[in-house]
Length: 352
Image 1 (cartoon, rainbow, N blue to C red):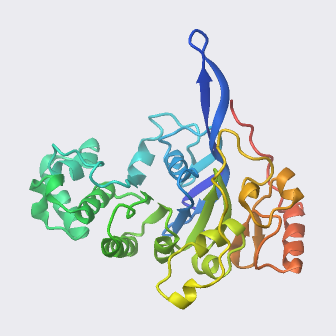
Image 2 (cartoon, rainbow, N blue to C red):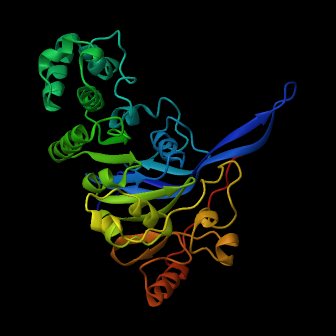
């Protein structure tokens, strides 16, 4: 089996809180991302979902090394990039690209589409004639005419502008594309078109996607696996269909129950809503970060941090009292996690 394209191990992204006019001192940290581990294979799509403010975008930017991680390890295509300097990150800037949430804000309104899409090629030293030809190819690849290169962002619809953003991301032939809520600003019908386009491009170009979203209904159709994030931590990772048919973590179950359904009879199903607001990442709860809002929380949840535990089917969840799992499966998973072969290295110390 080939090595993963992207490996993220115990990554943390803590932002210091500073105070004082004369003496600048740190009084705390915003724990935006805390102890996150996952991997992404070549040609795979990993969906990253959770409520707004849970740390999804911060994690995506950290993975791309737009932010330097506070702790942990990031490896891309077999190379450790955790502490790499600017010069050493140049290959990553070509091989990993980002598609933004707001397609209009990500394009310079004073630049033609051809100039914007061709900007990454210019950075790579590609000459004007070759750049012009490549821009035409990219626009046609995403379903726009090559003649669109002479026009400006305000002349296009939201869906067309997102196609332009995708074309720009593909200009330097990346291996990984990080999609930060790429369809959340679009109409539902246009969302489906963009999702289908991404599927076609992945098949044609062999791309890997990290698909960041808050809408589980959208992520289901594009992801091979889904990671659920809550208050800076990943609480569940599962193959896509497995997650929808057998959620293990109570938070995932609550998110799935909140998805609107067109069938009135199905809409009458019993729901267990999540109570209250997410805690502050400045002062997260002890133990399981979800326990203040969890209907299954017990004393153990308030004191002991649950670790991601592997169950059958490649399903992982960080919960002391998981759903849809028999007591025998829980005991077996706990024995496997406690075995010497499964014990990993100690968690790296966080720089403060």
